[in-house]
Length: 124
Image 1 (cartoon, one colour):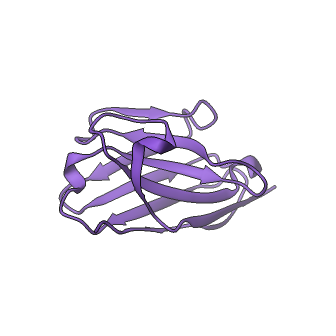
Image 2 (cartoon, rainbow, N blue to C red):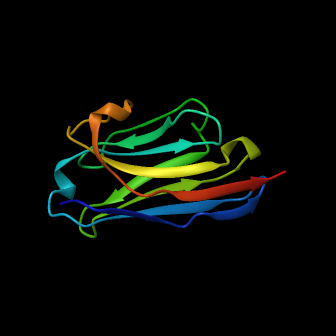
């Protein structure tokens, strides 16, 4: 059974930075794409960023492109989301997820395992 545990969320001022981490418990981590999603209060969950199995391919939502960077360390079973130039509209619960595919995936239904989420709050 795969478990994903996010960490690194918190309160930050607008323009600041945070790095989210996601620890993967299983032995299959390096085989599959990983993704970050977020959900703000009263809104639907939305795609943020995804990375393929090797880390050689990434894809971002337009709203975070140029500000966020997704990366992974297959030796440590970790995936990261570096978030710079944060805006109040980035406030949400952030979730990491493991896909059942090797390539980058933007749709949530392409992911089988989800973490419990970590809160990111950006003040204006």
